[in-house]
Image (cartoon, rainbow, N blue to C red; front, side, top):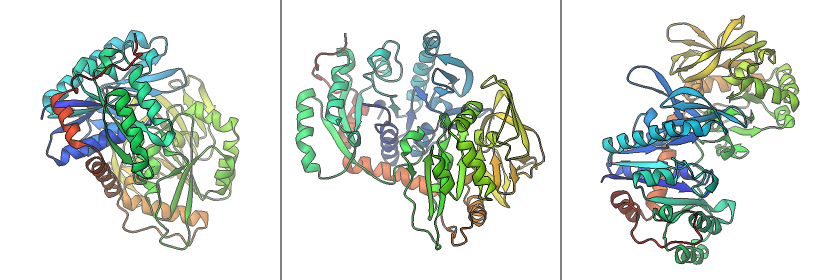
Length: 508
């Protein structure tokens, strides 16, 4: 097999990331050397990749998950362009893992040619190195205002001669109109590459859906390659925190008498919200994302997650009185955890001339540390010890501690202190720390004690790495059991289906 496939979608969060991962896992099981690819991603959920030269780089977390589905270590080539929004109008640009600048809607056009050229060259290299490359689109290919210069959806498919399938989320409603409209708004040249559909998150009797499947095939001349059922275990490594909904995961019943309730503040520029997934994988731990002060008041543990705009999001906390709810929670002696940007918000002072340019601002003052921002971003995959347990994590931050009297939460392998603890308030710059099973258990036991949940018992047998691997296997199973894999195989190996009819009106 030599070839590729583009997984496009009718909307953002239609299921492109999980379908790409599922196809990758299916091919990997069949001993195909397969790699994932997303030419350009816009997400603040990123993973740190360490190259052969020891230098750190960033890619979208979804592509790191897809790499795992392929049995591969993540590479910067899997996501050559990553845009990390810092506001509604600007994004940091990460090119092949390294920050190269900031773009706005105005100056993006001037940079786009360079980004597209890098993306096309990177895909060519991957196709030389692997049997198959499964590409994920972004948003919708029918965003006709963005088609000129597109290099992640049909622009990529045209440049590389890729067949495309379009996935639609039936949970949102209107899936048949969305599938038809997506094709009908494309130019004849783009339509010639769209070779079929997949429907995602179906619940119910497939027989009731069949007339619609028949009609969309008749209306477009393109088959539905399968219908994926909704599966409650498909929730890890979301590309966007909005994909989570309100509650995170599906926790098993508690091992003890009581649940531990965790409230994660859904910051406007939340980054790496995936840190909370390891907590949600624990039996008896209920994790939900919130913007409501009342939810914080009711929680046992409150988590301030990472942020791409620490000072701006700190201001948002104050505007919405969430700072008061957080202070009251801490004053009651209940546990409070800040991760990366959330840790920085808990400081006494933040000196930021880099992200916000506002200089020195007051933090929440709940940890006795001061934070400053460096021009160069720290990207690393550290190892060390915390709470007497081994810990590995990853770092993505400009902020660093310049002064403080708090006890460290962690220590690097060389003995340097990291993070802070002051009574019931904890902070760390390390993402991924709670994916370490023994460290997570010890932290949850301490959090339950501080919250007065003495009936909570941490499960001794939760293995987060195994939870993630099972989720990838579920995706592979869904593809094998519910999709026409023979048709997918033909598309990957032979290219776009021949003689696909034009669906009017089409783009000019």
